[in-house]
Length: 220
Ligand code: SAH
Image (cartoon, rainbow, N blue to C red; front, side, top):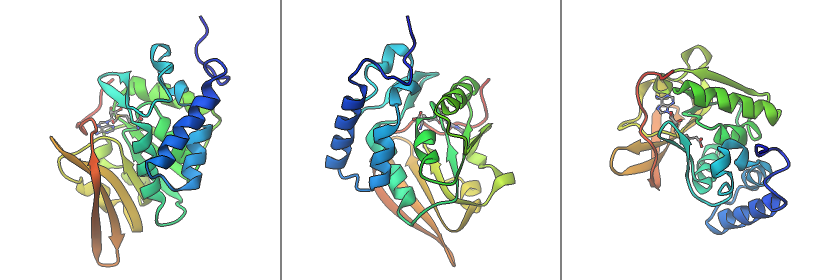
């Protein structure tokens, strides 16, 4: 059997994706560039064949290793929040998983630096971005709670796994005016938007979310 490819799963892929984008707009996503990136990015390529037919539902889906591909609404919302301060140069992504959020970011900012702690997920995401010819991304197999100090500072940092508290290393690697968008908490989690100001940080707690936990160390 053929694996899902760029042509899409049957003829319905573009149409179902269009419907998903309409749903996102109804749910309050306003940024046109974000909606356009979600319209043109084939989410089914980021899933195993057995899951691909559900790719354009607005729901999180399993990608193996007890991890999930984030819900499209959450991807759109976090990207919109990250971009709310204007165009971004260098963005650090923590917990890139399938690479879907990475692919969306790569179309909207200059450079993406993606860190993932599970090696097979990282390898698969790297292949997918190559297939999509998104070349402004560097991947690293590491514990993202430490950031990527050699490449800091970043204009934006986006995390897709929830720590109990905001990691100090991530704050330290934020450029002046830079924004960190991250789920925080254990049982209940909330999306935090933290901006580096002239004299410290300002925090906005946006909405309740559900993410996998940010875990220490790496996995082969
Ligand atoms: N946006 C991704 C989300 C994947 S789920 C997607 O849509 O596919 C969150 C990811 O964070 C998982 O792949 C998990 O392995 C990863 N993760 C958890 N803790 C991490 C850490 N400390 N450093 C890097 N990645 C981490």
